[in-house]
Image (cartoon, rainbow, N blue to C red; front, side):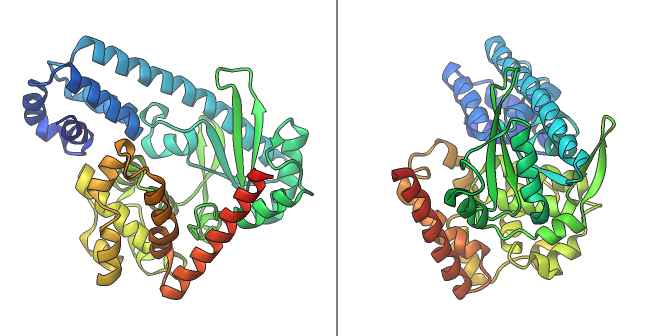
Length: 368
């Protein structure tokens, strides 16, 4: 019951279902309200849930429930403000050194997509994309500015290996704020999840946006939609919600034909298909039907992947021991995700081999 209420409130057409939601919550007991709050937290969607709930003005919400949800909302906003400040400072620092960088996810992307820092829960780390030719200089500048590399120096084997096979290096720095230790993941590529994202498209179509007088590079709407679709393939319902918000906000500005036909997105279209299909089912976002047909994978691939990527899996993964088990995770990581991002069987096998090699190395480094 709590699951249905949460998803109903988060839907784009939730106002139409207000009476139905009121009817369901009228029979809620204390355990049901606790379950509702737990799900909103586990899904990472409590800020958007709070916003929708306030707009609906339901009469039967327990005061304690609302106060706790409001406190979480306020804490998230405070943290996002601090993260945005740190993010803008780091971006400006790199820009002044002649190094363009694109924020991935994080508070700046959240503000662009949602129009408000408060509406999205962001993680406690920052992710910047840097052009490969600028990476060494950027890493050196960050080190000189007090950031500490997790890989113990650029001449070490682990540093070189992580950069080659993960496409990123993590840096940390202690802050004077309540954020504590801040993590900055510097990417020269997007290989960590073996997503094969098109960096050429990321850079060629990036444009500057203005955030309170700060000029920040932002990926095109097409790149954002593809990127968040790829992220959502970890069965993360929060990213599915992001996809729905991007589609709702930018529907008329998105070049749907480019995503459907450009060779740059050939590996990504299956992920986009499943992301927007589930965003429509769960959150009622308006997807162009002809586009959905254009990116739909072949019947065999669709049949196999639908058994893994579906509404039920997205809803239950955050709270299920089965979906979070090591066995399920291994099958997903090595087979399902590889099939998802490959164009053929040979490509799938090739990705699996790369994953086994990379995982084996990381385990070896931990055991040393």
